[in-house]
Length: 415
Image (cartoon, rainbow, N blue to C red; front, side, top):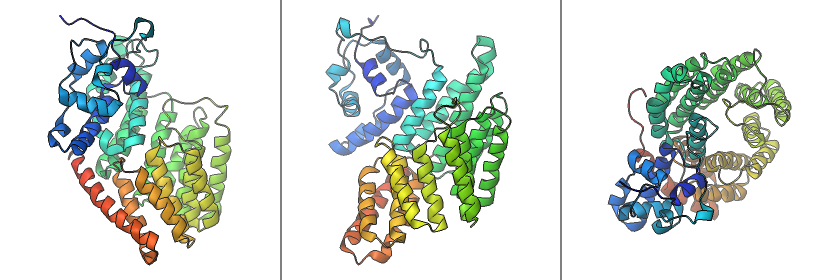
């Protein structure tokens, strides 16, 4: 029988916020593909870690190092030699590693945050399959057994709602709006099992946002108002109220209702100002000042208020840290569009160059489509040398993205 040892691996996993197996798998697969490309060895892309192996590593049940190919990927992923990852901890440095069973927080809530972090950094193409697998194999059985095993059914159903909505956004991010629509509808129905109405209102905000992305503007406005109606019958969550009013403002701007859009934005700002002192809901997606500034920039761009739009877009980027790669990328696209609309191709080119440099790891068809549209916006300025060079890079990057997104195609049929 293999002896349990206090090794560094669980500590490193914890530090990288990958303690959920499905989240670790997302990052490991990406690292394997990168190593295969770096080493010119395609076989490395197929290296994987099974659940039982993971469990043994986390428990310290390992006699020696994993296979060389696995070690190569782990070293690339964590930036440490395998000998250190699986080396013994000094007695005084041995931590108490939090596990799903010992953590005061539900493992489903931990999974929610873990998947949300991976999605922000990598894009839905990397994360979707793992989220759906977790929903089907871990959450679904708990929905039926929560009452029997004493687990809080509100927590299980709430996590199911949030993760299902998350899967919807990931499917949309990967270009599968058919899957996204099904997930959103399922999340809405699941939310009706909760006493906390904020979960359902949060789903409405997501559905409104998706409707905007798919040019269903009237539907987007109606969904935002329906979400606000739900909140009227429950606890007030300023961040969600702000998000719903912002979605309404986005729709109104596209409907050329300038005064109403501006009023909705002002109401959103007033609501968000209360967020610091108001209680939060674990079922509500984050919405902060940076998100409001980014959405406001889009509203103002649609309304033609270019100077104010540029100010809001710059403010959003200043607030958003580098770990939010996808959010920053969308913000950079908006800022570049505003600058081009202002007739400033040089400044827009600078933003576009930074965008290409920092968003290479994000697998998002939604972002790819926005980059294609931005390339079209740059085309009239092709005579500017910097723009010509950027357009060449954008073409090459688009080809690379198509190959990457093709390799991450989501499965056909309902999930």
